[in-house]
Length: 146
Image (cartoon, rainbow, N blue to C red):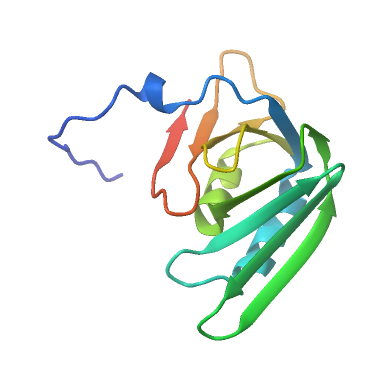
C-alpha cells in the first residue's frame, strides 16, 4: 500500500460528479474490456484515446495513431437509451475502472461528448456503492468512490 499527503486545495468532489446523465449504456464488462484492449493497441501512446460511437444497440470503438498511420476499429452490441453519441476516453483508465466492477455487465451514464461519464456495476452488494468517474481523453482524473 502506498499513501501520500497532497497539500493542496481541491474542488468539492460532489461538484465534479455529474448529476444529470440521461443516456444509459449497458454493456458486457468482459467484452468491453477485451475490445478496448484490442483497439487501444492502435491508439496514440501518449493519450491512449479510444473514440466510442454509440448508435442504437451498437457500440463502435476506434483508435488511431496518426504519427504511425495505425488504425483499429471494433463493434459490439449493447443496450443504449439515448441519442446517438460520440465520445472519447483514455482506454487505459477505462480498462482499470472496469477491473474494479465485480459484475458481468456495467452501466455507463453519459450526457454529452464534453462531459465526464459515470461507470457503475449493474449489481452491487448490500451496503456497497461503487461509482467511477471518467473524464474525456485529456482528463487524467480517475476517481473511484466506494
